[in-house]
Length: 446
Ligand code: PLP
Image (cartoon, rainbow, N blue to C red):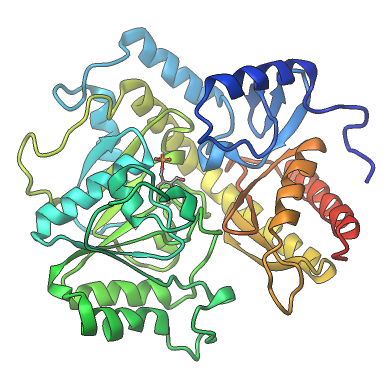
């Protein structure tokens, strides 16, 4: 392939020097899929410390919803910084966090009064949900899904089930957590086909778990990602989430929806559950909520919030800079960015599906809005995951000026900023296709 950035050698000299320092200074538990050292970014473009330009189709793992350094978000942060930086939102209050809590109560897809708990990250939002679900129901057990990612602190890690390395040597985790298959039709563990399967993967919960070893009356909550993120950008079939909601209702089990990755316009609607018309009892939020400032939230039905002062709190949750950034972010999302995500997402999905017809390694193309995954396989018949191809593709795309991330065993994910313009979508897909074609040829997969 002719490099779209001829003549550049990566990593450049400055990046190399930083990477040496990085490797020495940091815990080796971080992953570094390719040697990108960021200098600055604007919108969907980023530049490394040697001055090379890239298209960012990672959004810092689905975080920079409004692109890098959006002027309105930066201005809101500056204005707040001039007033004060911190005042322990758990003990004292201030306009930015009150306005944000009201806004979140207004926009979450729950049709009755809700209340907010502010956090600093996704994992902390999930921890808060686990604690509230146990407190409100007086029950202790939890059900989560194989392939799920809910975070890495010990409570949320007990729900996470997407890669063994995330759990190895960290046991014991929370007791009373059962994992069941997700609605992953491309690799149905029962080898059934939707809709003839009648969503057996959910029936399994009643027929096997509840009938044999998990008393439903002890289950506080079922925790679910409406589209699995780290697990491979897996979109469940149409009946799946509504059936899950009905199952929860039959047993008075809370439905906790983890929208940490799918939320805030990512899927072309403000929240992904809106695609299915499903209402959660508790919703976990983070990532795109504040365009990059560390913030998360757990929002639940007010009638569940029976816990007393002191039952749950934190020092930094609701940091005023993060709240100001979040309010500016939500304004931008509501004023056109969510629509752009829906429109650009359709363009991307259509073009990726056209490519799929020409590229035998593109096993499955799926997604909603700008949360799109392409699952790479060694061949379409066996569906053997092409992990080496995926890893090579991430590196090669980087060399050609496109930042992408993987997820699942062999999926490439496309998660640009929600305001990505059409010309960057076109540029990114052109780089992706040329890179894939080259690698298919080189690896004998064409
Ligand atoms: N939940 C989901 C669905 C996620 O995708 C993630 C992170 O990728 C988390 C929770 C954890 O969020 P954080 O890394 O902010 O703790």
